[in-house]
Image (cartoon, rainbow, N blue to C red; front, top):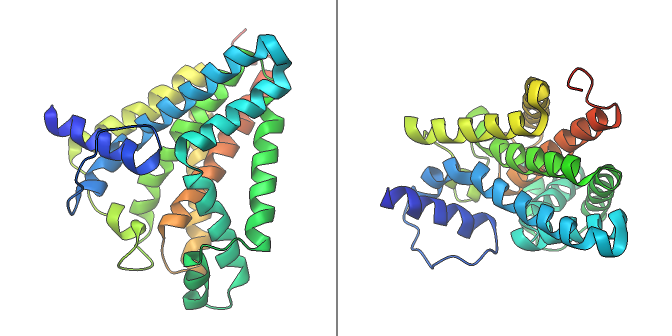
Length: 255
């Protein structure tokens, strides 16, 4: 139990700016802690729901939603958004594998990264604004948990593109118990978010991950930490879009 709590704290320490006790990370710890990544998504979603619930009565859905999305970004230190921007710059701005990886490691933001960030964040806000508070909670829960769950799938689809990056640090087998915790967390999040539509949400998350894996295999020959962040963002956006579409149609078959 103590080791599980330590690995969970490492997952929060790695993926968020939520205050946690300083914990030394030994070799292999980040890979083992990745089983708790979906749980981190649950906490980030809870922050977003709390912000929207508090601000909506005062300033309306649009302002409250913008603030909620900003709170999610702040809670993670824009960690995944940075990965999206770096991946867009590298994948579309480089001519070969080595140049693409070098661009992704450059902290400067380029045109492709700027455009990718604007599009993804704008779409996320636009999809969430019309939703009721309940449907907003469903959407961010599904997006935040399945997005981080995609990391566990990606590291089993692709090898690391470089031996010294985050991609290499999280790649490798998990204990059966860790895999079970991650799978149950993702499945329960999809079920709570969409009831009988949960298989659709899971299928969309898998399909987007597979598409990202195919692109990364062709462009990089494997995955990087930035690429995992980019996949997280795209899976999160896709699952939010599915929940928003179902909500707009009155959750067919459930009402």
